[in-house]
Image (cartoon, rainbow, N blue to C red; front, side, top):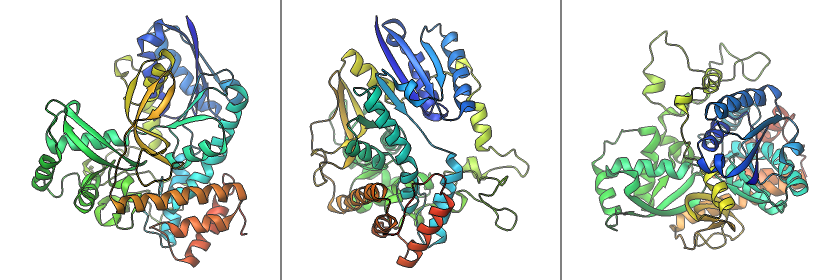
Length: 461
């Protein structure tokens, strides 16, 4: 049997690391047709040990012969790897809550700050150094391996790696599949019966075509009728902005308010849960000091969050992580993420189509630069991953919005390479959710001081 080595970097990640391990253990071909080695790597020894125990318990329960080992040594984990799956984030909610609150204190209207808005720019600069370290280590120890990325901000980081290193990289996200789920609810159809084309920027894509796979019928007329009939408050935080954007631009967007709203200036009118994000009481609590509570992230105003008894137990992030690592064979299911299907298609030279990957454009979306990383459909086979041969045409207003983000991508790269607060300021002032000039300058200084242990050292130039 041929050997395959998969390195899982950021093995302490709950969502993507455990999902990838479950997909591997459930793959019959990775069990019977390859000699599989899985290297689990994380900078936190406690986190990688936790994942290692979960993985060994699971692979033993499924009688899977894969060789699994753990390390905190990046180079050792990736040496001679065929595929490197990356999902990294340091002290995730601690820094994300800063990305959210500080720009808003200085006048930004951003609603999330993960992938778009001023907060996302600090998020990018924090993760870019470690991502480049991974890619440059790959250039030395596994130059032909595929870098399969789940780390956000997806498009910004994938574009940086594709421009600054020689490594083959693809970015993955399930946002488009969330959009198809929404379409199926409006249309009252099975997901499997809905065909689609579309694309855009990660967390800011649009379905340019939807059709009935059985009949070939264009489904947009039916969708238009159903959207008009649907309750105007239903799933408000998830789809109110999406429905408004559909009426404005003519195409339905994905994945939903919390993400699409990061790239436009008018999102907060359609996001009732805004005040719940990283909520805390400044009279009773201090943020980001030693032994203080990191405020819990709340995705939206919904029954899960609002319909609580007065003394109901609070579902904290720590409790969620703890529960996720309790192994139960009955709960092992396929994640529906794309990493393992990609690995199998490349390794076994299958040909599959994927709903959404992040790669340089090269003409796939008309009107956007060739070297800008976009998200659209792709074909995977033994030769690698390529965008599907089609041309997605988006409305002028959407292309213009994405163009702004493409320029921000370039300025952030320049800010990182040149260690320049001035280039970062230029990027922030371009953003639709930018504060004033004076507020932006003060915000940059405060964030660079607050996150000085993890941000690259930047200076005014």
